Amino acid sequence: MKNGYFITFEGPEGAGKTTIISMVAKELKEALLTREPGGIDIAEQIRMVILDKDNTAMDPRTEALLYAAARRQHLVEKVKPALEDGKVVLCDRFVDSSLAYQGHARGLGIDEVFSINQFAIEKMMPDLTIYFDIEPELGLQRINKNKGREVNRLDLEKIDFHHKVREGYHLVMERFPDRIVKIDASGEVNDVFIKTMEILTSKLLQRGAF
Image (cartoon, rainbow, N blue to C red):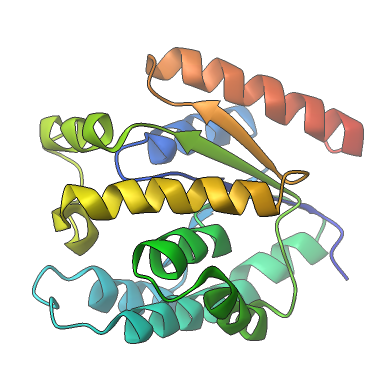
């Protein structure tokens, strides 16, 4: 039984969510910070396969299944035990990424990809999702300026793909309006961080977890 509070952070490439989640983790010192795909050894190995720039022949269904497999292992090995221990879990990406990227942008269908992931997660969804919204052109511009950032296979997709990802996220928000909170990520990092902490503080206070 889940006793903790599961918070996920989502957004297109270059939205700055990884930077913001690191800042949040410094504020919420007792929280567990993790990421997808990855977070534990097996899932990190799968991550290397998924994001390898040389794996351009990867079929969209293979991609979706690999994400789901990494998600399953990460969930049972790291996320569920932390939640059962009453912790706040901060996760950089979760199932919504698959719905936006593989479900919509890859054209596999949001319902179809959600079905794959229901098998993987056994209906364990986040309590709260912060979605960082940004125009694809600005997001990719940020990536090109950030020389220290990991450039992966998804970053190399054409601009149309990234527009579809953002469109997919908007469809996912319509599906889960009570769980997903949108933040405009086009502004300065500190402004986005302040807005994020306002939302998190409010939600955690409501749950008595802050």
